[in-house]
Image: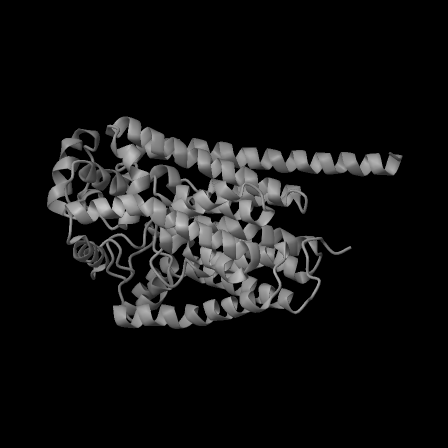
Length: 450
């Protein structure tokens, strides 16, 4: 090896070391803040309860979609939750998860609250740290320091996954593992199983990611169909069990969804929501449109009209374009962002934006304006959908004078509601543009330009 080559190798090793240090720093802050805030929270692991107590109800052959059946099981553990408010009780007893989620949950339901909660929390934290490390490893050849910095920013802004223990942490992690397995064409069986489990728990979270592999054709389509078969196989036991103990579960499930999304309820995206605009805020486009017209018929239709053309354009490009690893990452970056917008998603669901990093660093490595835009957009997205960011912003907002006119109130609410959905929309449109642009270049590949 020549002296010049040795010098370049040393510089490369130094950059990888610096990137890894940034990643580890982000992980330490994530763990420290996350566990400290979870310990001091008035309703820790509230979102895990939304799965745990219905699963305990099912384990007793009772109707897990009936509040009357779940409430006594929750009450039996009430000593663990002395500071619960009505919202925490509602989340724990009114089940809105699909039946498919409960095959995965039954092992946790067999445990008492303490071990089950700790196991879930440990699995959530370990999975997020694991996929963050995998993503850095995927991107390190392109820009080790920048990828380390962006993933550190992502982790520093992910404390809600620890505090609330929402299933999004595990679902996103499983999806990222599956995508890496499929793109790198390694450990296919693991990828199929991971994506299948993620689909059973939160199909609205990873469904469009699965759709990409179905539309892309070739080996990707085979993986998508195998994932579908695995999803059905995993879901069937719980579905048959639930149908046996609760033959009217579908009507009850719809009623629970309607109760949560009613005007002024917890999942209402509108201005009157009791749970949509603080930490863990709603980030779908309904929240933005509802500021101007608080009518479900208007804000639901509006969000569909904005996002449907984007999904159609994305699907057409996917069907007509030869698959490469680079195009795959651009396609996934676009759809990961767009999938947050048309239907109900909250702040912690935006952790799926971790899938945008390979596309971001791919564009950065090609040394153009698009690369700078990608880095700025991703940074803004991680900040404006971030947990720590909004903890600080909402604390500042609470010290502002309260608005006294309708116009001032709308501006005040817009300050809270607009940033997260709009940056996610901008990110999705940008990567859709980059994906469409890549389709016009026959040899567009992952290697950076000289």
